[in-house]
Length: 552
Image (cartoon, rainbow, N blue to C red; front, side, top):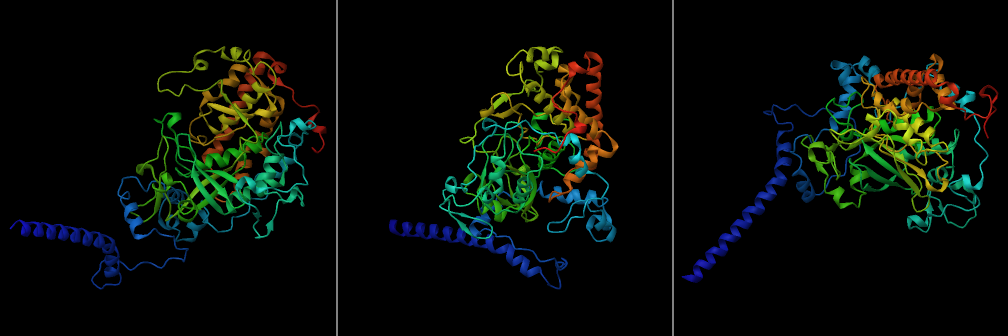
């Protein structure tokens, strides 16, 4: 009797196991059977699928992986990012109707976002004379002569790029030709990211007419992505992407549409980081002739082929899932907005983002991080000292490195730059350690700019109002950009049209820059009226700009 009960118990366990296996198989097969049964069936109320233009099929996960990933797909808000580009297209097309759906000729003409692969219309011939601006004498002022100590790297131009740092014995270029690091060829054979690195000096990240910069921008959108990993630190998700030519860039994915403003109840330290702000900051920095922002370009990335399939970061890979709309999504790991509620979703697996070229590795060129004297409190209730002490700048000017050299003027340049963008998130800044205190500030991490076009955050201008100091070259360029023939908004619009994911900025953001520029000039004018021109405007020009010849 006892043996009979044991046998029955074993049979019961076996039956439970078989039932469980059957249920798993049905879960896998049921969606496919339903689709096959409904397509083309006379009694089905579902319309047959509309013919769609052919596109490359995404590489889907295996059955087992698909089932695991789908466990996340029912979470609310998991398709947040996938709606953003569609919303921008609807807004650009006029809201609804044929224009919004892309069905009418008028809708096609008014569509703001250009489909991937489509040719971009050329910029208007006389709308914004960007080329004329760069030919102006103010943009042709020569740098001081460069000594060996003024260069970040002293390079032997006869030595060829050595890719040992990438753990390879040879470097393969785009034409699949193999080059060995034998020192037989010149500096022209270096990849563009390396040309950018060796062009950095004490006064600038890159020269005004360096052809390697335009080539590097093209590389950022065309080079094959071979590896992806999450960047450690920071409050929001950022990815480090490595290219086939061993260059690297920081990828910030799209989180908001162009026309969305930062909600009024958001604190500055919890605002989204915007990919288009990073792109626009690079172009604004160049138009202001600072050249302190590393090259940034926009790119459409295939989340399946160019992120998930090439990453070795298991923490990142595990956050991929398929949304209820059958879009590929992921969320990574970070302090803010890394959850299924704030997932980044493609359509079905294409996502827009910014790619910022990496600066030289810290092992080769150390950088020093400085706390911004006008750093905000990053607290919901507390205020920083500069917000309550009107004489705060006097204390700063007595503290190294602000008590000598040009550092306080660099802070003023950064203040103007941030105010034009509406960026309140400048808590630290960096400089290259090799150049000591006599060098420029690198304008990194600009993703919280261009959040509000309907509001001008005057507290960003407090350093300028308190210190009443500005470079003459900066002041003259700001006056030039306020003129109708060199209007800042038109110059920015023309410059941004060159980007592959143009348009980059919503038109009200461009108009807001013109308005903010007038506020900056009024602040400088008030300082001059109070303290006198010579005490406010620091003459950094060694010659009359009207007689300056072409720079070196």
